Length: 378
Image (cartoon, rainbow, N blue to C red):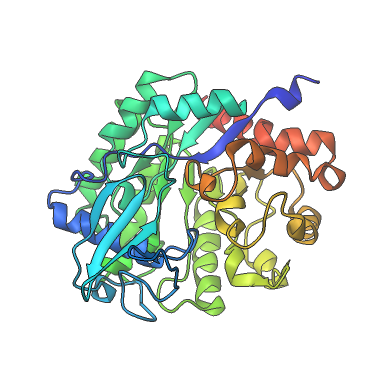
């Protein structure tokens, strides 16, 4: 086997602080709201079940039917995180359970030691830790994971998006500290969470320019997690992609990554994913500093079993539009183990070698990510 194929760099993984703690929030109830909303709406897990008879039903939820992305969608229930990755609650005298984290996460936290053990078993050389508010907003825990295994683990900083426009100096200071003193390697930006705090403006608007200028001057990559910010429609999704395209026009020199890839579930039709041509017309695919992740098992694994041959025509289309060199493999570990094993996530990409070629497999599984990280570190 060539040296190329031995380089496995997971561009999308997590370590998780104890979810029964504060998660970096000053008020633990605010953190609980994020956990309940994510647990009620996120689509990569299986339906909840009734504890008394283990009956599953898509209507067993911690949020009201047809919820909006809003704290107002939360039902007035007490969320219990007793262990084994389960979110539990009681409603009308019945106990319900939803498996949000893998059952092996017994203590509702996932340490750097756990991650390294899984990496060693699966043959993963390096990972980049991602961020999301429902897994905590503090940078301290993530920094400690990096410092434990600096040759294996890198991580992104997170600044609460809803604070940037009104408390910009502090946000800039916190980001500077995260990059220069806490050994973090880039920024994760999730504009969807702005809406939870009544911030509906475009994140490339004038009031955000000082923050983004500072990010540019830091010379670190920015990983954007995008979705429709109001109603879950294709047109609203396109609007967010347009904001990203405008942003990259303002900051073409910044390494930019669209996390997860596209909104795969939005475009899934039976056993096919039909990506509209407009996506490729909107996105800055000609910019060599623009990358797209392929995070597949966690987003599609609940519907499509390994090795996910249904994705082949879509992948072929993506390669024809974008090429190989700006695609990054990511697992979403440990969440992907709700559906696939860590090894299967890697082998899924290898099984597409007839589309990608051996060099393409090596590039997507590690070389492209290694190049990205080396260039931004330098």
